[in-house]
Length: 211
Image (cartoon, rainbow, N blue to C red; front, top):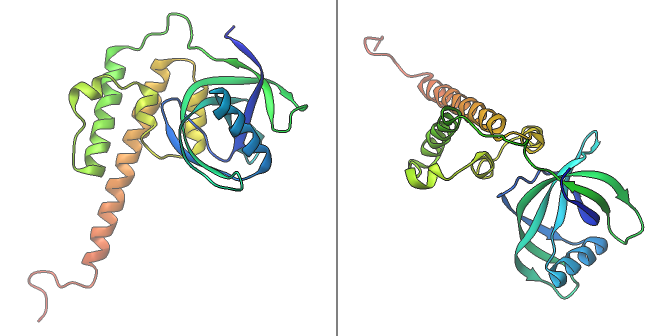
């Protein structure tokens, strides 16, 4: 069993935060202004949990406040947070002014190690996607240091897929998941490009056509 933290501050949101991912947040509700203010003062983390259509998920990610961008006179804040550690919500705590709960920090399965071929495939597909989107391929040395979370954190995709990745307790499983995700994204991009080219060609005369 992983480390259990009691009365951990929670922020239910319509997003899924992954470890290593950096996201901006605008804090405006009084309870969350209090919560984030305490986290800043005590240099502590809080948890982001996906508030999905079917309800609050029980696996979330701890978040550290990477930067306080702006603090307004009425207490509203703009902050940057960085995902740290997956956790499971064990019990809701209702005696604080903001949402909280007892959580268990999640670790990967003991002895979990990814096969080099799985990692290589995921990194190659990631590099292909980055190159397609930016016309620049990642540096090989930097690419070799990336794990599943590091790659997925830079790509915007559906919260259902991110939640599945967050809940997986095997790096090899996550690498296989992101490899498939990057491959399917590349295919969609290629389809969009082909469709756009066909649309642009509509109404044009083919060589040898009537004059």
